[in-house]
Image (cartoon, rainbow, N blue to C red; front, side, top):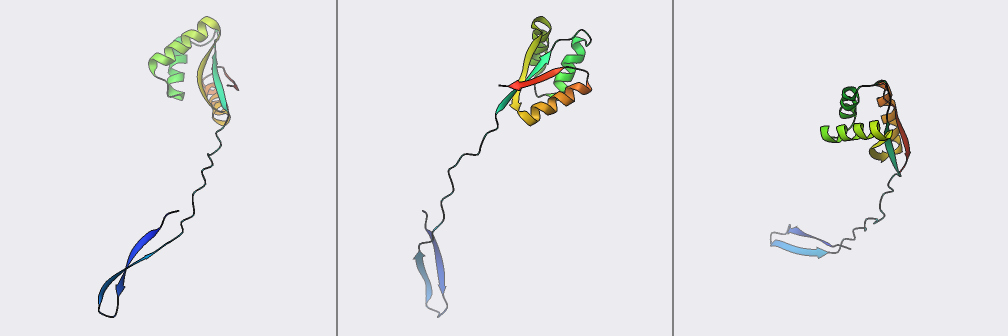
Length: 111
């Protein structure tokens, strides 16, 4: 526990007196906040969208760099699916909705 000090003015005209009084400050709980379980957002290959459209959409909706967006698009094209990012479930589900507006298929699964 910490103590706090302060100065107290002497109102009788005799000057300044220093008083030290312990003040109890409650300790903060050390409990860590719960972290949300991670979910993978997966990009799926399709025969409809162009590479340019998919890359532009990934760049618009995520924080991935141009190089990363290109690599993940190529991976999805060659293997059928690519990991875009890992986030919490609510945000992952939001990505599904956002990519759907661009007619791009993504799915979510626990990491």
